[in-house]
Image 1: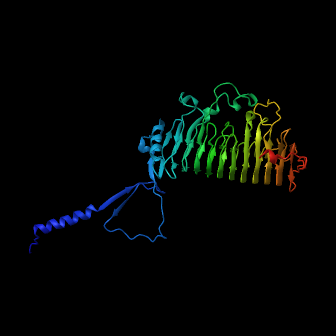
Image 2: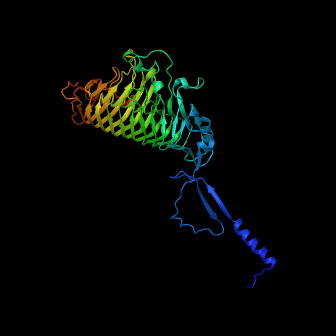
Image 3: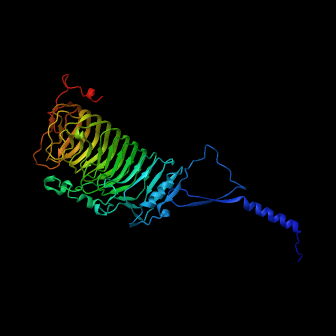
Length: 462
């Protein structure tokens, strides 16, 4: 067989050609965030790129850098303090244009009280909780030099989404058993001793927030709290705590506007949702609430403070086995106004006080009478049906002696006693003016008709 021979200079040319081709082939590795939450590696050849899609067919998919807390030293055994690892991951994610802080499934992370501060450079930062996060177990495990009033705080954040299929376990049992808590004393009284308990998750001075899909249980106090926020969407949450757990509101908002709370299940020892002073443009829809204390506006006007709440809608929801249904509660001596509130399409199941306005709210039952009050005007109740606990009236409008409730509107209100054969209290009214557009069940005869002599509360709400 003849041997193939090649001059030495041709060998050199061939080797140079092979080396040149390899030089222009690069391996590009990026973290991509998607349904698999795994790293994906793509080999991209710059020698022969595939043809691009036509502009109208191209689909833009955001690429996120993933910051897994395990990569920053978190252990995730439920005992080790993983706070510093979370802070390091946050600091890195906060500086990246598109980032996910990942709390991975299969681990339990114990975090001390901490603040995740902005502003961040990230556009659409995702705080994804797929595992379990928890605080120290009770007040005895809480560091002495750290405030006991809050656990996880997100401060000055714009455009963040907190989501995932994981669990936030507030470990509230030992906090509920402090001697100061209402259920520990005789007849609901409190005893002396330290009483501070942490809010589980608090957003403060933040905007364009989404909280979606999480489970949270057994908060020491409020489960979620939004203070001085704008643009909040809460969706598909499950919040659970025992019916006797004190002050465990599911979601509390204060001085916050443009809020949407949708499609969530809440059962706890206080209000499912509570709306504090300074809130407006709030839409609450498709909530299953209870056992609980219902959905409340207030309490407002404590310590003679001014409180304004307006443009609130609560609709298409169920309240069950709760101490209250839809409630407005104010302290005597306050000022301000509650106006433009709509409660519609709400089903009650064995609820005590299904419809209630209480302008004599008082925790000790020894509050002195005051002449000033928060004005209540333009409140509508439409299609409120179901059953009520006969220990209290189905409707109660206890308005201030000095300033009446005005422009109350009721239509298609049908509430029947949950227990048959029991004496049923009549609806109660005090200094309440309004209109029954369609006769209620039971009939409400105590609501006074609006007259020209009635005080014009619309002026007081201006």
